[in-house]
Length: 490
Image 1 (cartoon, rainbow, N blue to C red):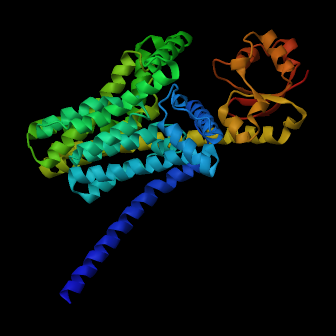
Image 2: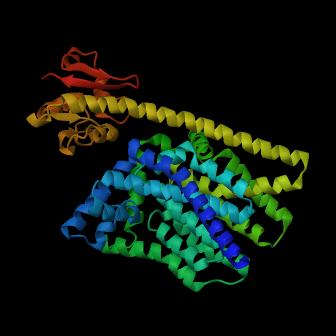
Image 3: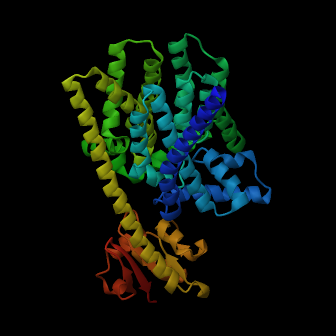
């Protein structure tokens, strides 16, 4: 009877543990899947990723795919996986977004797992899990078709295996991450350094596995261009062109640096940054060699290394600006350290130290409040773009060969109109007279105007006071976001 009771208790424990992880999965996964299905992509890079995925999918489907086709401005693994999946299920857009959502969910679960390893405290680990699972910016970017969140999944996986002293598995995650974004390449050298510091030995197998991703990428660059360093050449040319077109980025003025540092703090979280710096100090002061402290040391080192990599790239202008999505991996890496700090400070039971816990809690609430506000603003902005897209879908005479001038990728996607029915400024003249001729020659019926630079439409509409221009345009629809639709009359 006792044996049966023991088996029953084990089964109940197993079922309870499974139910608990399913609950965590749902808490993190549902908002991210909803974001992927309901929110359109952010403007810019997500649509460039989609274009790369569609090109890969087409070549795979046509049987013409070669290794050299993986070469491009971005490392290819995320795009390639999405292309493979979309071969089976179709719908490249939602495949790319849902892959990112699944990866974002995995990041949340790993934050809980790493926090549990550092603290052995479920409640504090759940707090760290909640901070990322319900973080508005992390939810939004988990629903976009970009590589930042998928890359963060493999960085967090590498961290989890590193604190478990499974160095070969950690190196495998670095190798995968290193084919998604080059930021993972810094861990090729960091892992053996950490292993030597913790265990006084280095696994050559782990080192060569981690180093395989940059070596493979160099080979792909050579196969595609004949130059093994072609990727770095292309990236440097892009940055040089970007800086020439935006002199404000080229000069590190106090105002420019302030804006980028504010983005860094906003996305990483002030509490996380303070916690990681405090964690480093506490580890040095404690001077313990137990597993908890060494695991925290590894986690803090991951965070500080990733942060240093970003800052060095920024101040050397290898990364001209800091965007919120670059810091999501820092946010995930730092949350387990925040959980560890809260536990250590609570155990010390000193009034002034407890005040630090309160300050960290306030910083977390402030970060959530600001990001919730900005997330709501993004949703309102999307609503306005959806209205413009619906207007175009209903009124544009696409079947008669008419075109739409639109530079907003979100509007173009939401409208559901064939891509060849749109024209935009990269292919159009820059002076207003030639621009008007360009619109007429391309049978442009509607022009979508959004006040942003650099845009031929914005330059043209600065001259709307002139009779020769104003007479050609009729306002057809507008929003409160300075997004307007004009009907052309030639």
